[in-house]
Structure formats: structure tokens, C-alpha cells
Length: 204
Image 1 (cartoon, one colour):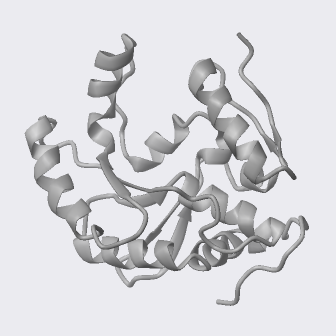
Image 2 (tube, helix red, strand yellow; image 1 turned 90 degrees about the vertical axis):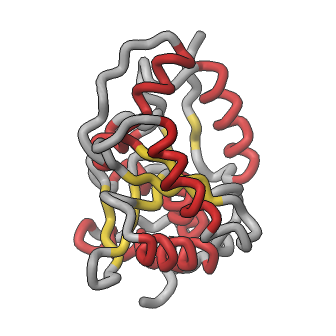
């Protein structure tokens, strides 16, 4: 698949998924992560968040693949054993498979997110149902996008809110999910890297 063209010209709806895939595959590290993750055969896995939405931003603004991406988040979902030990038994070997890469790959079982999140922040989040459900709880609809390889190693895009948010120039927080300090610090950093976009803050 050819790399996306430059300029902020949003592709037609029927071509947007292919554009996302081409944008991600334009990053050699993302291609490697996807290929190795496919070999790991983690349950309900996907490459999520910045490795995907930042790839689209880079393609839309003419920047090289991998620009501004400081880690690769690899999600999976396995609710059979929610102990920390069970997650570590998966995450340790999985992250070791990426240890030679120049950018860290962070592997996380989405079935356990509510446990450590509630303990850390004193919230009462309900358990997630699957990786797609995890995307619905990201801090912005723009961030709620992922890519993975199916059983035949063909790329597929996951986007519970559709693809319009990632092609929008405006990055909006989700009230109640985006914490003011973390969100505002993050968008301040991203605005320096992608000044073409408008990042809306969480008001204190």
C-alpha cells in the first residue's frame, strides 16, 4: 500500500481506513511492532493510541513516519486471570520480544485496567469488556483508534467513534476521562510538535 499524500485534505469516508493503515505502516517501527505482536498471538490485541493517531497527523502534515512517537502501546484483553502475576507472566515475555527496538513497547492487559486505575485514583470504574471497549474510555475521541493484524496478517482498524475525530484538526478531551493536569500538559507538548492542530484544554 502506498504512503498517504501530504497536506490536510481529508480522504473520503470509504478511503479513511486505508489511509490510517498506510499512515501507520509508513513508520518502520510500527510495522515491526505489528508483525511481532501478530506472532505473539495475544488475545484481542491491538496497537493503540499515539502510534496510530500520531501516524495520521504525520501523514496529513507531511512529516516522516515515527515523528513524535515516544512509545508504542500494545493492548490485549484477557479476563481469565486478573492477578498481577498473570499479567506479568504475559507482559514480561511480550515486552522482551521488542527489547531491541529503539523506542519502548508497553504491553497492558485491558481487563485489569479498572483494578489499578481505581486503586491509584480512588475512582469506581467498571471492568472493561474488551479492547474495543477500552478505546471508548480513552481521554479523547481522537485517541480512540487502534490497528491490528487479523489471523491472515491483514491490517484492520478499530475505531468505536468512527474515523472523523482523527482526521479533525481539533483534538477534544472527554469530560470526566481527561484529567486537567495530565491532559493539559500532554496537549501543550503535542501542540509544539503539530502546530497545525487545535488542542482544547480541560478547564480547571
